[in-house]
Image 1 (cartoon, rainbow, N blue to C red):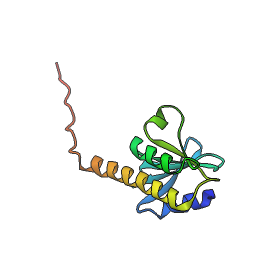
Image 2: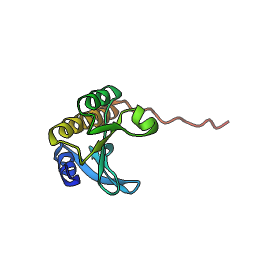
Image 3: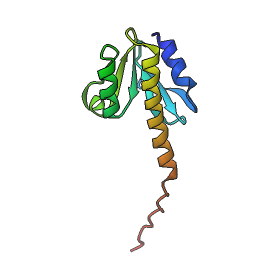
Length: 122
């Protein structure tokens, strides 16, 4: 898989925009929540999954998916080896990541706003 196909898959999802974060392309659900990225030289992608989803995709496709390093990987950030990647598997993982980000955005929108605290004049 080429970076162009990864990008096309991400941008085909509803309400996704491409941005940039720390010098590399990212893909945001609702224009805000990052669910996928490409590294600076566009040889690897990342999809933000739950740890359980990460285990599942890594078990099914160990040649394509590896956890990101450190705490990000423990939390579900999953690297996509683009040279090894097959469109169907990446599409499924990307859709899961997009659904997760979209749900987080919807939950944030539905939370009641906290009233501003007033400062005491004493």
